[in-house]
Length: 115
Image (cartoon, rainbow, N blue to C red; front, side, top):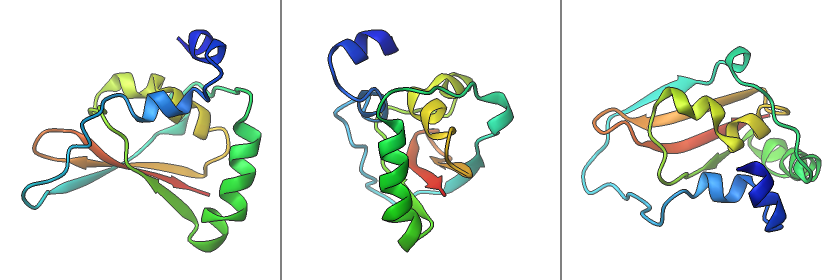
C-alpha cells in the first residue's frame, strides 16, 4: 500500500489520515476516552518527507504548544491502527501519540501528536 501511494507522489500519511470524506461532526456531546499509543507495539516506518514534516512540527506546533491535534476521518479504535501509516511514521519522532476516541461508537475523533 505504501509503495502504491509513493508512486502517486502523495505523502502517504495524507490518505491514511483522511480515509473517508465523512468528517463525523458531533450532533450531541461526546464522551471521549484517551488512549496512549504504546510505541513498543508499533513498527516505525521511515519514509521520504518525514524529516521535513518533523522539522516543521518542531519549529511551529511543538515550539508553540508542544503538540498538534489532527482530525482523522474513517478511523476506528481497533488493533489494526498499529499498522496505520500515520502512526508508524509519526512514531519515529513523536514523544507521544494519543487517540481521542468517542466512547459510544469508537471513532477516533482527534489524533494528538506530542513533541
